[in-house]
Image (tube, rainbow, N blue to C red):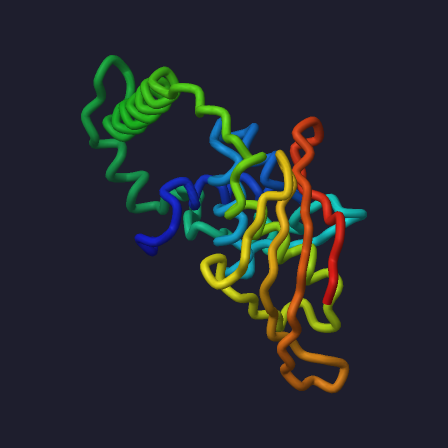
Length: 215
């Protein structure tokens, strides 16, 4: 796996593959991780074409594109079907307490897996509460998505990086960003548009809203 991916990426993909829609809140609650990490995991999935971002009345969610049947993480379980030669060979295998060696090996593997899961879960400590009301980096990530929903071709949008925009915290939980975005117009030509956007983080609903957009 690419070393730039989050170590939790594989498990997160397996989880969202069972769903039709997901969100940063969904991953945050399921894996007991911070909101920032949940959003970054979805960003990585979006870049790899696993999920697609959608905005419904200012509420951000992700539609899962790749179904579970496609085997996203490459883990394929094959049913063991013995042939006639293996059946004959099995008859000569030694048995321990009435069980075949193969059955003992499988039982040991299952026990080790259960033990590892138990130890990893018991050692997990609660994640510290994130302060999104002062996190302008996360606010800018959602500002980009909210701006994209107002473009002719959202998929072609290339935003100025966080370090190239002017960021101002207007008040607690409210941010303003001034920057630019390159995107295709109605004729397919790439044009640069300056923007000034104000987004607000709602602590009660744990989501971001677009308050003002000038383009």
